[in-house]
Image (cartoon, rainbow, N blue to C red; front, side, top):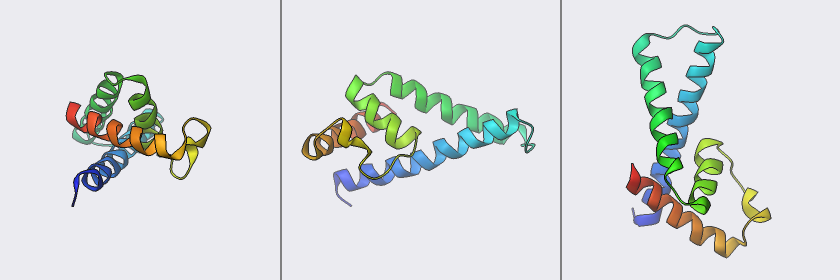
Length: 102
C-alpha cells in the first residue's frame, strides 16, 4: 500500500473509532446504554487524544481533519472551500501531519 493510500486507510479507521467513541459517550451520558467503565474510559481517551492532536494542526489541516475524521463527511463537501486540486493537495498534507502528530 503506498503512502497516501495507507494514510487514507488509517484515517478511515481512526474516523470510525472516533465516531464510535463519541456515540458511546453520548449514549452513556444520556443513560441510553450502560457501558462498563473500561469501555467508557477508552472512549474518553480516544476522543480526547484525537481532539488534542487536531487542535495542534494548522487551520487548513484542522478544517479537513475535523470535517472528514470527526464529522465523517464524504463526497464533495469541500467544493465551497477548495478547488479539487487544492483540496487533494491539502488533504494529503493534512493526513500526513495528523498521523505524524499521533
